[in-house]
View 1: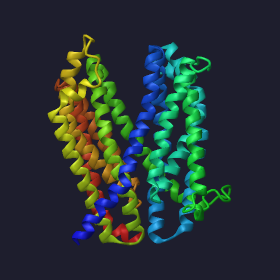
View 2 (view 1 turned 60 degrees about the horizontal axis):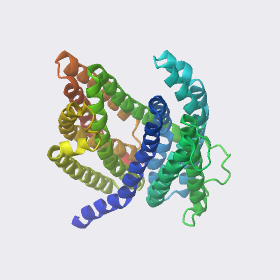
View 3 (view 1 turned 90 degrees about the vertical axis):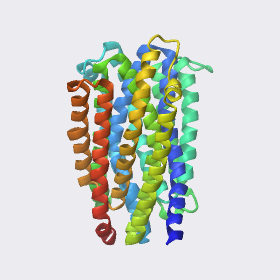
View 4 (view 1 turned 30 degrees about the vertical axis):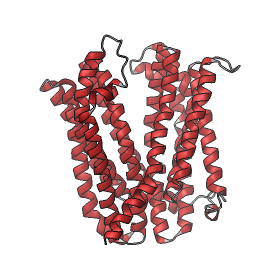
Length: 452
């Protein structure tokens, strides 16, 4: 028994560490455009930030089908059904491709609806310029997400990490060349950033698709053989599991967007401090997201094999590792808040002392925030391993929008706690989500594992 409980943490870390690295690299991929545009111009930076947020919201909604693939393949591997691996993977790619194609009109007309949402005309026009070029990148972005799930579920997490790291470097070089007109290229500004992003997305898809099809150990699955053939049963399976995942991600993104909006009502300083603290929290969250992905794969395999005992032991090990990381993060946030916030500040700016003071207080709250965020993403990962996504979608949405947002508004404005009150509301919503989702998993896991 002791040997088993030591084995599971090692297996989770072996899968999870490369996934944590790839998630951090993915964050860096988005940061590179922001850094480059910040050196180019303020309206251009605002436009790319706005356009990137719009793209990300649509991506989160569509990525549910790709994320559904990870537990489905893990379950099929647990059952020893290689045919089902291929069938589910193809239909996840189909759904991702279809979603990516139908979203392009949204990006093409983005200038009109951004103006309708009260954006400055120049910023709206530049954002539309970006999205009209980068919009077709939704297709490869979602296909890459599906391939990452496919490869991760089959234990090929190292390639996911290295390809993502390569994409960061290529995006930085292309962006530098096309935005500023270096190395003989024309100076394209916002359009250059979009073109660099689009190129990197298609190149990443091509590399990962070739690896998935021709890597010797994966060749037997024949992922793209007769790719045009529709499989109604597998399509329905991926769709039913995937759309609630996409909606859950959309609800969570909306929670943080709503918090940022409320911070803007408090003050510019509050919004700046919130942005920094949220960046730190997001970096910590990537650690737990990687562990959650690993837990989905390993618990999914146990579920597919009908191994109730193994499923529960994997869940305990994954939660334990996540709690250890939480403890380390809390110690860091509480002991070094000034040093951490200072990394993101230009101390010569007159607003810096105020931002630093508020940011350190928010970082103390981030300790509680991190615990709720870590446990809710772990619970979601484990629930996906037993193919339970619809009820968790409603539980998460209620926690975020029925509890979190109202609590932030009441504490922040009715009780006059300002920025700290808004963050307390976020903590309450996330802790409510983590409690309800964990309860859902532990009551459903034994029965669902036997039926998988």
